[in-house]
Image (cartoon, rainbow, N blue to C red):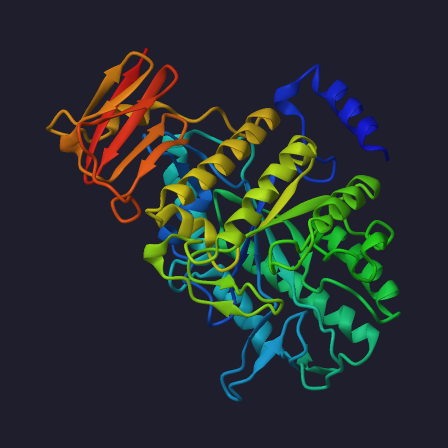
Length: 464
């Protein structure tokens, strides 16, 4: 369908009741966070780690709900007996077995250590009295392990040995996993999260037999009341067959972020394909501990915390910002559901970063997401009561002047000015400033409420 026609029809549909419109008829998840959980090398997804995914806190204490959907997934894990990786749908590694699939559920439910789904449910319950009831419960999508490599060692079901070298048994084990997951979900008795769907872990399907295996399996998922989600990479094998295969929601991975030699055209191709085939899009970025090298190979490199998330790799910071700019320019934020690949734990990393640029970009994204949630009626505008909770300085380090804020020289050299909506207006750090602050400093500002941070001290300033 033509993009202009989609935009016009969507705009007309919004007129009668803008607060109840969804971005897709297939799903009411606006913003889906990818949470990699299962393998032994993943973060411990505690309530503390999940908090910035559930609620965003701006510099002035204002808060709003963050993601309304969570995809709990992993595509491989370690086999402790062999020390080798086994696959759950992707990568050319050894095939997995039933014991690995069961451990994937154990880790994702997290009932023994209050992590994973258990932590998510409890955290949301603690935040509802603060943020209010959202428009619907936070939705959860779980990944289905996909037996993509021939194997006769998967295990057995009801005493019968399974041979996943044949199509029927591939379907059989995926049905078993969905049944077992729903059984555990019902037994868990979660109060604040809702099981919404299942995700195909494999991102492309080269073998011909998948054209029958996928529809048959999806029909079964639908009988369980599950929506079917998929996130193929750009031009993946079968990407344009998603509807005939019985997928309900499909996002395209542009793949632009990961290496510096990937052209901007990957973004334009992805959005054009999404408009043409009624698909959604994935946004991609990494966090503080891992980023991609600036070469052409996808290899990880450590980024020191004190440098900021992208202190050593500004190109990747720019690529993340480019995604946001592009999604705004192409109306993706206005009309599409979005999935967010964020590496290991990028949202958490951004929340912990002391770097002003990191805070600026994550605040920008949070404001965009909140606007989307307000439009669909899932959330309200950010709660502004937090401004009164700012701990103020006992020294007058900043005060309003005509058209701006004056920073006294007693403030020191580390100065950050943040607007009430979380935007960084000014930042000066002694580590990257050639001269010391002398005789004060006037920062031009529009009227509004600002938070001025000077080292450990903070002051609230109202500019008229």
